Image 1: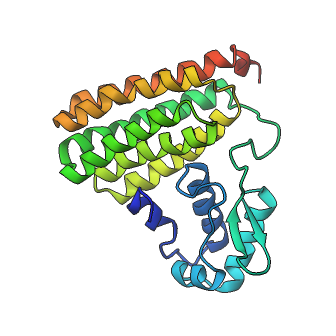
Image 2: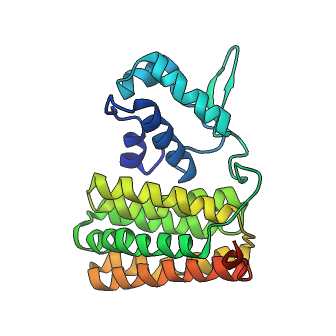
Length: 246
């Protein structure tokens, strides 16, 4: 199973019964938006997925219908059929590519500082040697993907940040980071994303990784905060300030 293991496992963990359709839609939608589930990836068969989530087959089918209608998944018939993440999910799903408003982007950045900043500090404090190595590996993958297609970069970048959250050992922080990466992915898909901008973004990973490997929580938090503020700035800059008009 691809990394990050804990976050992927959580996608198919049992749900609360109340509001199960909405919970399935949110969980799978966020997993797709954050890159945990990749374009073209096949979901477990419906009977198996219903069992994993501990929901009725009809409930699962209703949720999958919503996800199909939204363009997140597609269903193929015949041998080798099933439900798959839409292959071109890297494009804006609504076709409009509307960026977040300036206020919404600022709010998302503040939320990243709070959640991802704490995750970075705790990762520096708590991470095992295996988790530290995984963070370093994911950073290298994100840097390599920066010159590739946007979708490959977004998946790699998201997995880097999820690896940091996983290194804390906190399932709640992993879930919160998954939601953040889904929102960030939607924002990034709505703006130009040239490879030089992506390379500039991944350069912010280096001091963050160094602080986590050194076991320095304050430095890890500062590096994460600088990184998310830099991401905020280049999103605004590439939109030439037009978000303020929306």
